Image (cartoon, rainbow, N blue to C red; front, top):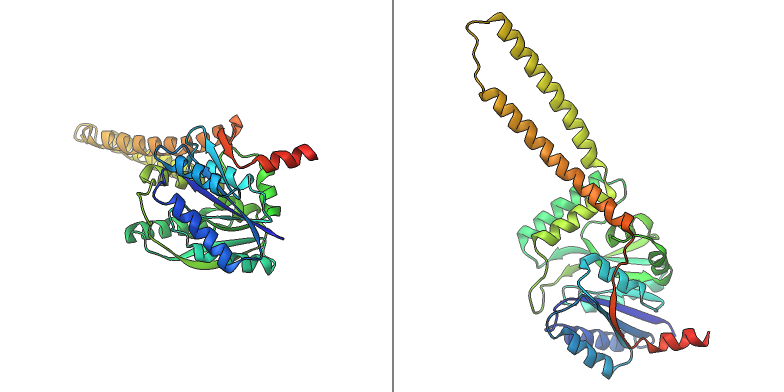
Length: 320
């Protein structure tokens, strides 16, 4: 019997964690009764009752597993690490807040059974804020044009991954993994299926401008050279313009020695413009350096505090 792993990352999801678990079990029992399953929750150091509810779920059903992180390791590391801990023939990543429809699971499995190693669920429409939708779309268009690697528009990570690709993820030595880029760069040929992203069922989103900026910069610095190239080209152009302005100013000063007086305003304006451009690109260069620094330190993706219902794996390893 084939086994499906459902991996659900969570952080302060006390209002959703039990409901999503029961919804997944009901969907699997109704649409895919011929498969075995496991549901793995990886909790990113929740401060509410999420962990208490996860303990209850794990006590009720041994096919439900949980990993408790020692602290919050961010929106990328924790789900990636959770995927690497699954044991099924395929792994489906699912958000805990019901924005990823549970009803999509049978469609993902169907494409997998037809031979697809990776099935990406693509948000062709969304019930999220229209302004955010517009900004995301513009960002995806920009990064797709600038990147050396194909980028998948409106792909959040929701999808199905064959165990052979999960093994690729396990062997990938990257302390700051960006799953969407990895799927596009290193993944097998994939199948894309559309869906409409739903509104969060309960609770508040933990994404803010800081987390969105972090995601944008990780993607930009990991898969594009455009930022550095633009800095180099613009710096060259600005240097040339500054040289021309300086020569023109010198010539006018020599010709009209007694009458020419431009004052200090042009000089101050030029210094401010050049200084602001330099500061912008120094900060931009710093983003690349920060990304390199994180990867060079080779720190673990997460540190576990506790595991629930992993005893069977330990027994199997002991018997081997």
